[in-house]
Image (cartoon, rainbow, N blue to C red; front, top):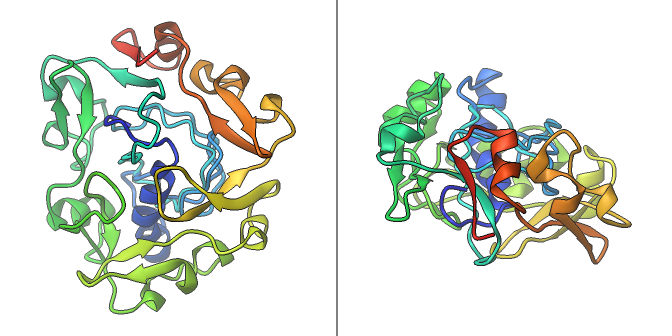
Length: 272
């Protein structure tokens, strides 16, 4: 979430990118958090593993999603949350230059040329630069970097396709009816179609719309904030969530100390 992006989008992006990793090379290897995990935020990316990550992915945010990425785990969180939550505080890494944003071990998708150090002095993930980067990261020629990122704010590695059938990952949440094959010839995740799809892989999840996106995602259900988040991470535990309409909604970080506890001392809570 280097840019102000809605914490849920990560999932979608990740999902999209991860699809190739799981479907075509088993493990894309560089981690582009698009797996299917139920991260700690509440939505489902597009892959199928159940991460619970409130990890500080390689792009800058501490991706606390409850999403289900489609994990080919080239964990490169292109967290381009599409900012409908303009006032949502989030963890960011501070910087003086793009090189400050690189976290070891870096990959071709998470080195200095994939970041900006913005005018506010915060790291901002800018996405993939070329199809060659994606193919190097995933170790397959089945991925590319679309010129048009679709509903996302930065470019991301996506699987190449002729039809939506080429995007099928073989699960109810990530088969052909959950993707479009764009005019550019890339798989674009279109979201879940029903709660039953979500429940087929994730107990306690429902298919619902995500603020700032034009697609529905699998999101964690709740009876109260105590049902949300992950206790092992300061910026994504119970006090960072609300339960709204029986769905977990991330409310952002509460302090720089939370972000630093989960990352390093050069992190802060932007917008608190």
